[in-house]
Amino acid sequence: MAAGIAQSIKDSLARTRNAVFSRIAGLLGASQVTEDTWDELEELLIQADVGVETTLYLVERLRRRARDEAILRADALQAALREELRALLPGPSPLNLGGRPLDVMLIVGVNGSGKTTSIAKLAYRYRQGGRRVLLAAADTFRAAAMEQLNIWAQRAGVDIVTGPEGGDPGAVVFDALQAARARGKDLVIADTAGRLHTQYNLMAELRKVRRVAAKSVEGAPHETLLVLDATTGQNALSQARHFQEAVEVTGVVLAKLDSTAKGGMVFAIARELGLPVRFVGTGERLEDLVPFDADAFVEGLFG
Ligand SMILES: Nc1nc2c(ncn2[C@@H]2O[C@H](COP(=O)(O)OP(=O)(O)O)[C@@H](O)[C@H]2O)c(=O)[nH]1
Ligand SMILES: [Mg+2]
Image (cartoon, rainbow, N blue to C red; front, side):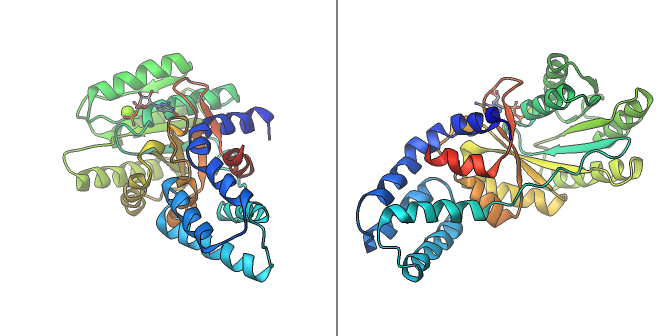
């Protein structure tokens, strides 16, 4: 892993670290373990948006280890907590991209989550990596959404296919995949609506977009990434479940990690949603997206 990635992840965890994990480190560094230690640990983990279920699991694991391994001093517990946090996160695995003529990534998420910005960052990143990227502006619900993506496409230096406002998003994706083939592109990243008149409509539309992609390109979409706004913490998790019911989400882009103290939600995403975080947003610029790295993340929490 590049040192730059670890540093970016660490930097973007500053708020989470300062608000919560430095206090956990203090708690677990100071005194003998008492009943209060467990209560405070529980409180702090919940405050970091680790989630109630995941927090209770973690504290229970630690209590058991403290007993079984006769860990009497709290500082040894800090090492154990790091291990347990790391164990909650899946090991590294490659994205399902490459090895075929055309990869298709579908990006879903509610409005305001950071979807458009994340798509631009992904486009920029893959283009820098030598991929021939084309964007599909399939959020046809709002003309402004397509226009915004258009501006980002220019900044990122990638092609884009749009459609008429209120048009069929499936048709935009279909056109984009045709255009990608015609122009020799090898990666299509599709934006989708984050809001329609009703949630039912939105989920039905996403399913349809998926079907169109699957008919046009074998196995597509190869990745379906859900963009979650890290500043919304646990609320993002219930949102995520709706998307998971509608489309086969394969991973998460956690946007705005730099703006929040709720970085602990990464553990709830892993344990309660069963999804790998693939990228984190670390700022508002095109370059501010880094691949998720579990070791760097856990390390960065404690500084
Ligand atoms: N600090 C920070 N801001 C972000 C990040 N990602 C997105 N944003 C901001 O979040 C706001 C909403 O982003 P946008 O991409 O338009 O969200 P969308 O409605 O889901 O498409 C914008 O002001 C972005 O600049 C991030 O990683 N860090
Ligand atoms: Mg958008």
